[in-house]
Every structure is written in structure tokens, then in C-alpha cells.
Image (cartoon, rainbow, N blue to C red; front, top):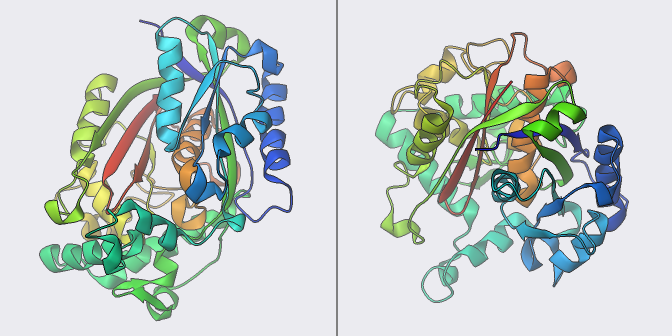
Length: 378
């Protein structure tokens, strides 16, 4: 079977851009092609990770996005979850049909409505939507259940925001970066009890691109290829009322990725993780479900310092989604950041230890309805 490598990465800042969406997108795609020494006609296939009407605020957004990413009259496709666009690109190479694929995810959050009204459309129009449900409402219910079932404290959840926003100070592409205390987080506005404002991800701009190549081509394009080692995905029931919000499908997605990569479930073979945590407490819950610690032990594991930049398994050295949340693009941002850590090119937020294996995670839907896990290796 073919091997697939990430050969180059480019990303924009998550802060509000005054450029048009097309210029904003073009600049990042031009940067990655220049890094690789390629022109757009040299790339076999282009895959977009972008939302249509809701998160882009455009009808036929996929048609509008096509020019900016250089995909006009090129073979390609699009997925609204950017981790899916990444694996679609990988499969184009695994099939043997293409030896290079450019994957670009994008959104201009600054021009969109707020995320909560948009995510209310996830609910069915007859039974759920009239109740006022949205992603943050379900997250608040999930957080309350998590604390009551396992004794995780609000302060432990707030600590994730303190850690990640502090990490973001060292990431020039982060949207929200600041040094905050537990008290600052606890005293921030309660959005939906018990969720506080600083525990919820912002709404960011963002364009991120990764260039994928077959093994033969990758070795000509870069001296530091980052290989796809494992991938897993799993989706839960549509209605949140049909689910145990604390026992989702992430363990199954992780198991599939770990088996494919040949790594154990304990996380001991993973050097760094970029985890999609739109809400602070979810980083603790997802780390449990990724196998980094036992069920219900996320708070104590966090208190041990294991997930800090200098910990045994640094989690979100980039600042994560709490710092930068370009909604449909955030999964590909996690993959790009994991690749940069392996290449040793993460700049001031590069972790201190050698990174040979990294995990990238993405999720969407109410309370983590769907999860994707990507394992990358040197």
C-alpha cells in the first residue's frame, strides 16, 4: 500500500482579517506552493474543507472557495469537516491515482453569525430546535453530568483554559491569547451554567493548508516528511437524548487509529497531542476517552501536570481551539500543528522533548457526536 506524507504546512492567523475571503485564502495557498516549489498545475488534486451556507455565510460557498484555493478546473472535492477533507486527500494518494494532493480548510468567522445560532440548526426542526438547543447548551449539560458523575471540579475545568490560553501566547497564529488565572475564568460570564465565557472557544478566521504526497514524491519535495500512521473515525446517534453524553464514540475512533498505527492505547507512545476542545472541560473528557488516563480521572491527570508544555504528554501546545476556533477548519489546524511539532518547526510553542509520534483530534456535532483521530509519525 502507498504511504502518505505531509510535506509542507501553511496557516493564517486566527485573528480577524480585513482581506476578502478569496484573497485571504489565496495567500496561504500561494505560500504552501512556494514552499514546495510547485505551481497549482503541478498538484494532482485539491480538496477543500469548508462549510456551505451556515459557517461561511454564503450560498454555493464551495463554488466561491474554489478560486482562492487554486482548484479551478482541477480534480477535487470538499468536506465540511476538515479532518474528513484531510483523509479524503490521503485516500486519493492511497488509491495510487495521485501523487500530490493539496488540502485547504478555510472560514472567515468574523463575517459569520455567532456559532450558537448556527449550531442550533444541527437539531431536527420539529422536536429539538424549538427548545433553543445549540452546541453550547448540550456542552453545558455534558459538563454538569461530567462533574457530578466523576467529581471533577469547576476549577479543574477552568484550569484547561488557563493552560491553553497561556500556551497561545507563544503561537503567533492564535486568535485569543492571554495570561489568565483560575479566578479570572471562574468570574467570567456564565454563558450556560456551568459554562463560563473563558471556557468557550471564540469565533475565529482561519485558512490552513497541508500538501500531501506519495512516498516517492515526498522524498523529492522535503527532507522532513511527516507520515500518516493511523486514522479512525466514529459517529454517535443523531439525537443527544438517545446518547450517554459521557460515553461517546471517541474510544472507538481512537482504537481504530491506534491499531492502524501500531501504538498502544495508554498514550505512552504519543509525544504530543492536539485535541479539539471547543469547551475547556472537553479536553479532560476527550483525554480520558483517548486513553491518556482512566475513566473519570481527567481532572486528577490534569492536576498532575501531564498535559502541560513540559509534561509527560503535552496537550494543545498551540493553545488549541480555546485559543483559535475557525470552526470547519479547526480539525485541519490540529493536524497541521501536530505535523509542525514532528518537524520541529512549531517555533516558540515547540515542546521541549523530541517528537516522533503525534496525535491530532477533531470533533463536531452536539457533545462530540462525531470524532476523528489522526496519528502522525516522523
